Image (cartoon, rainbow, N blue to C red):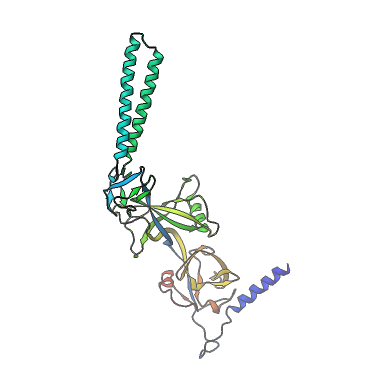
Length: 373
């Protein structure tokens, strides 16, 4: 109870101290600025939130050798665009070709033996079990021949999808081991743009999405996403209004990674670029007031509202968004309320006022660089 009385006394002293401003040099003590009254402006606003981002290819893979041998041919250049199935590298196939021919000959031999055994079975010279044995032998020989053919095919490295070739890691004539990297390949048709969003923003986006939505993706309601490149230009494709959210928060930074997808028809974007993501959100019927009409007491923000009795009353407001020189009000003010714009320091709670000037909301917001009086 004592704490409550102390806080009430402090608030009263702070309210009484508001009009007690020292007169400027050369200004008489009784001289005051004209009190100006206005109302909130209700309008549709576009709020922009900016995040640093990293640009990644939808598919960015290491192209590696699947066979040992000398690098015989390099059929691509660095930075070249290749199509799916295009030959990129060839490893000398002599040993693999010889092994394939040997296994193929073994398969042919097993087939002849099976045919001969079947003929003997028809004359009851050998049993059916003998035929089955040679059938198994043929199947094994064919499998080994197919394996040798696959190893031979591995000497030609082909592009698994359309993409751009990165730096060549090996030179012509190099001795290559299985699994050794030759280059990387990037599919740049669609780019994945990653950016970190604070937990508070994530919860705001999630609350606006509503229930029964796609659990793996997040729809940013009344929003659109743009990408600004390193030179300050805006990318000509937009990211829509849906993002992919990663599973875990970073508990050290309080952020969670988002991913927006951008089509890249002209292949302007490349893997590894950086930029900024802009999320533009449209607010319908936003209540807007100038910042200079407000004041703070104990981390709470207030305005002086003019009531029907022509007296000013201190009222607490909640700010939803702060922009340059203006506040977007979450609660505390309605469109038809009147509040003190200029002269905040000259009035106190419950004081009657008269002879004030009235400005429209448009006039009040037209020049936002004037200091509060």
